[in-house]
Picture 1 (cartoon, helix red, strand yellow):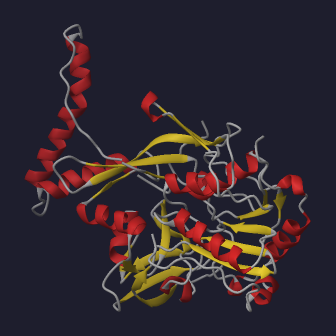
Picture 2 (cartoon, helix red, strand yellow; picture 1 turned 120 degrees about the vertical axis):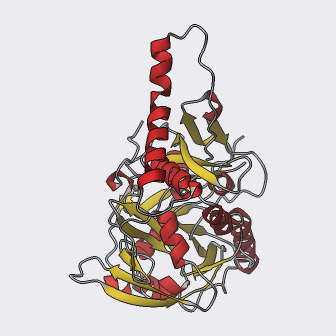
Picture 3 (cartoon, rainbow, N blue to C red; picture 1 turned 90 degrees about the vertical axis):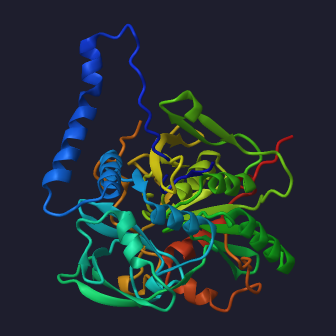
Length: 431
């Protein structure tokens, strides 16, 4: 079983007999809600305008029950559960966007880099009003995802309202394979490596290790800019193992839930092959979940300087569990996570050490602009309490480096900062 941060558990419904000592009044009170549910179920079956299957009613009830808890808990149908697993493990076909659902509005968290949506100009904060003419207002996030995905080469029409626009526009996007590869690395200057993490999927840590090894073969690394801007998160174990690459010991993240079994603390190992060069981490309001775990750990442990804008603020953990005897599952929020200093960033986010707003014009922003909604803006939010291709660093100085630096003030400042960091900022090896 694995944990997933930007969402995931399984609903296990088991009726238990009331203890013998329980009063009849208390027992009746405990089971009164089940009687009410059964009565409504029966009324719908006998009086609704059309025939409704038992599966439709049951799945709808489970969705409503879970989605009323918080924005990240939900029931997953067989199709949705399959798509969720593909999203972190293999290749799937779609347009390449991460979405969030709030007050009936489907909002783009971020387009995945180099995907059809990214190339079509879909931007963080865009509102998807309809998919192929079907309004999204009454659809769940998983239902919207199901409509957007489809066979490779087929087209989907999105009705999108851009931030600042007075009228929506239709965007026709051709579906393609969406790779899970999540690491890109290139030298901005001789010795200064820019590493982009676009998500945390099954191969993120191994691909990051490959990228750093390849970079070392070309020249000595003097400093690293770790870029997790607009990274929506992903798998908890990958956030932990990525952090572990840069830390020798101590806490990376801890989890606390209602049950004692949900309390866990993850610590850095004392193994070899650590990455100890000075480091700057770029963050913005699209940095969420697993990206915030990495940023929080490196900031609290004084391992890196955070630069950019305040992060999204998703400090909850979801567990994915299949429902026995079915091909369905639920994703359920089971715990909050805490940074090494004991901070819960739920609905708060992480403030960077250096606040540097992005100055890039929207029309040139592509995947880099800040997101205008955060976890705290979602209704029912909890209060604070494997790609096939190896990621490779390009040649010693990437020919496009000057272009990237010219249009990205956060990246420029990150480069200047990492060049000036004192030796003490690098990883302190234990005696």
